[in-house]
Length: 187
Ligand SMILES: CC(C)(COP(=O)(O)OP(=O)(O)OC[C@H]1O[C@@H](n2cnc3c(N)ncnc32)[C@H](O)[C@@H]1OP(=O)(O)O)[C@@H](O)C(=O)NCCC(=O)NCCS
Figure 1 (cartoon, protein in one colour):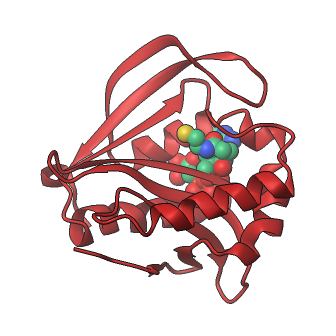
Figure 2: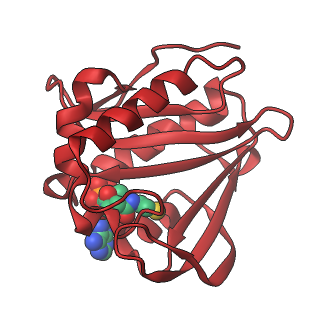
């Protein structure tokens, strides 16, 4: 199955694949250590050039058949700018599995936007991509992300102690690994 230029809607958001014109807004929102300190690969500071090359890499990945990732920019209703990201990555057709990752600009936190986006992308992974298992990892101290994951009924597989450094601050983190199976999923 080849799904291209995907757009997913929720009550307040449109999730759509990234384009070159998102670079400015992605750079502005990702260039914040309160966001990147919870992400493994995002550097701080984060420049316009970083955003451009990241967006380019997602556009190249989108051409792969079969697709192994979908990178959605999070946009608010009719506004065009992507103020965060949610990605379905590491799609393994043979295992029916994927990993979800996400972030939102700090000015948009705690408005239930990621609850909406995460719910829609879980639905997309199970119902449209027909995957069987979603994996997700969050630093143990990331209260917001762990709450979001618990609310979506993911189960904790294990906590890996001092497992990973974030690129923004270089700190080492304990990391919680979770999963959700399609048979456990209810819309
Ligand atoms: C984690 C993140 C995506 C949450 O997005 P959000 O849109 O603010 O989350 P929501 O508003 O949908 O809230 C979801 C739940 O988490 C709770 N929550 C959100 N942020 C929180 C925080 N900083 N501290 C404690 N609880 C928090 C909310 O109260 C809500 O819980 P409830 O439904 O039980 O009331 C956002 O804070 C973010 O982008 N952080 C930086 C990057 C990051 O951590 N990415 C995830 C890496 S695993």
